[in-house]
Image (tube, rainbow, N blue to C red; front, side):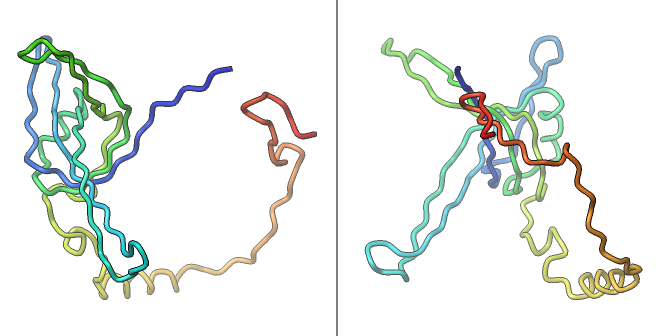
Length: 167
């Protein structure tokens, strides 16, 4: 039995304002790059050493997702769900090259205009949290009841690799 999976989840910041192009038959495409930062501390016995690296990932969005990129600006924080594709090309000297590209199946915009997280959300806004806490106190309390279980609620112990059960 074979198992194949081509799924990628990425979150990062746009490196430039995206451009949407219209191809033949009104097909829209948007190519853009996101920067994904990684920060960690410690190496070789020194836990105070700060290390950083950045990965730049090229993303291609088609049609509906390409149109949604029209409002997005450089620095925007986005979440991409997609799949990897391998593209090939021939250089001027005739040698074959290839690169990986991510085709977006779904995009979620954390921020659209490169704002900081504090500006884009209510994080750190004490008034927002006070009102949220006030709303929570107005929710009537109910008794906790333990749900009844049936035979259909039992854990499935099927071994997906061998199609066997542990029973």
